[in-house]
Each structure stands twice: as structure tokens, then as C-alpha cells.
Amino acid sequence: MKTWLVKDARARFGDVMAGALAGEPQRVTRRGQNAVVVVAEAEWCRLHGDVAARPFEEHLLAFPLTHDEWLEVAPGPSPLRSKPVFGDE
Image (cartoon, rainbow, N blue to C red; front, top):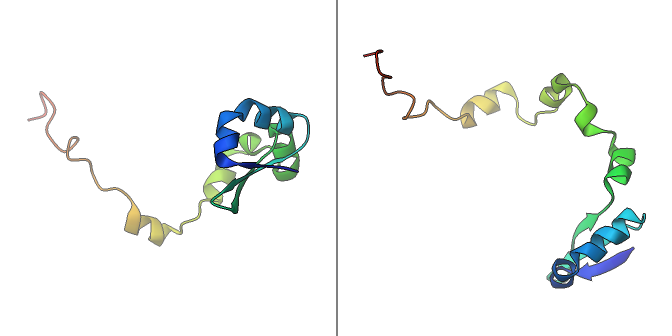
């Protein structure tokens, strides 16, 4: 696996992509720590399944918050939407 400093990966992103597309994952480090690994989409799908092809229900079931947790963080009504619309006054 090739390793890049983040500044070099930015400057040569085409080379990072080319390596990943050729089947070699590309590691990018930031401040001396491993940060990310770039892989081709085909490899990602092979490892994790085709996420986009999953039914929407599976995405909802994978949602990380419980119903009660969601109620705590859910956005309230928008102040813009609470104003009357013409004819609704």
C-alpha cells in the first residue's frame, strides 16, 4: 500500500486515484497519523456490499439513533414555515 502525506496527495490526487483504480489502496497520513485509505469503488462494494442497492428500509433500520434519541435532537418547526402564507391568514 502506497502512503502519501496529505499535502502530496492533494497535489497529486490524480496519481492517488490511478493507484486505487489499479487495485492498490492508497493511504493518506495527516500530522504523522494514518488518516484515510483511498480504494476504488468496485473494491469498496466488494468489501461492504453495494450500499446504494440496499432498500431504503435497510438504511432507516441502520440509522444510529433510537426513536427517543432522535426526538431529543430532531429539528423543531422552522420559523420561516410558521408564518402564515398568503390567503391562510
